[in-house]
Length: 173
Image 1 (cartoon, one colour):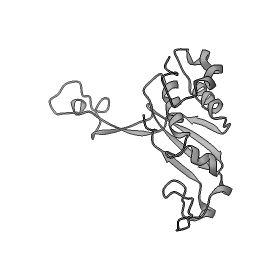
Image 2: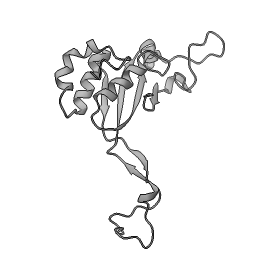
Image 3: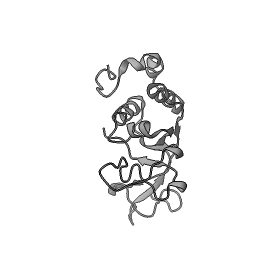
Image 4: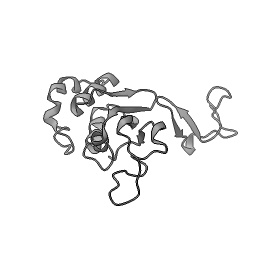
């Protein structure tokens, strides 16, 4: 039912995985496999336990004279803490120029990627997407109307040393 209600997804493409997707627990390997199959891209993988910074709610901040705060055990200085349990990263590597543009926010694959990741997640985890353009497909930035590059997405300083990586925050929900 949830698949049919998601207009960004072609739910017929997910038929081979419906049995696994109906299970209660979804591993990173399952999500990775579903994404590879759906987007027909073998160089797609998930990096688990990516570091992020989490804001501590004001009600949970440490205060003098409050019980249940033990120095060295439950006390954290500041209002932000590092965390590795709530975020993962989807890496899409080896993309040519056209396929790279598909996964950018202006491309047709961006929203389906976000919808499929959200659909396969059982827990509300944070994630981002790392796109890697093949080195031979990195183009030079040229100023003018015939420029095919997008500043910040498909431009790098020094083509010969560019990695061709773009990090996209969680796709729009």
